[in-house]
Image 1 (cartoon, rainbow, N blue to C red):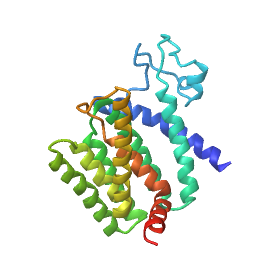
Image 2 (image 1 turned 135 degrees about the vertical axis):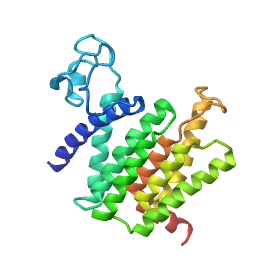
Image 3 (image 1 turned 30 degrees about the vertical axis):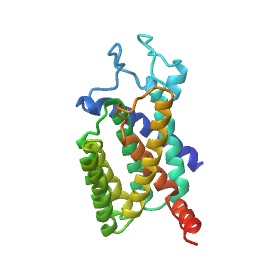
Image 4 (image 1 turned 180 degrees about the vertical axis):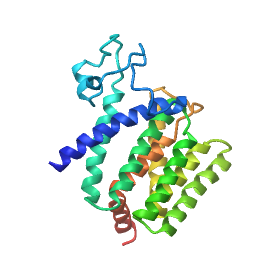
Length: 249
């Protein structure tokens, strides 16, 4: 029963994340005005905003103008619900569950904004870091020294790569790396960076093979960094243990 409740909660949060993804890049409030159809501008009623269900009942179209809606809206809602369940399975009812839920939600927003606009708003980084500091004071999940070192390692490595590549790494990615490091500590930010680089290389090569991208086309790194962090949060200990047992014993 608790999984079902958490999944529904995740769907609701995912619906809010959709609002953030749409409005933050445009500099709009995420509270006012009420949700509206982006095609006809009609304010949506509560029964138009039930996560996933409204989309399915309306067959993916606006009730008022018939404009087709993107499958990404229910997709993000379901993604958030599934990740919330996985986090609960991983942490249970523990103090580090709340920071993990917050971080994953923030990373979903960052990832889709970066995919759409090739940038990561500073507002999200500042908000995330400020909230992380509050978590460190009230419900610390790792030592503050580990958080601080993770911030330095995550941001420092990406900053070094930006210097070496002469602009190949964006400032938003550097700040995001520092933010993730603050939440996860130095060990897991190293794992996150490795996974992000590996995933970016695989996906980038695949896109070039199918001629969707060329070597000169930019590929946002934020989603890969976020995915690496999510994998680290969920299975980082198992991956590190497997690596140590495989190569050092």
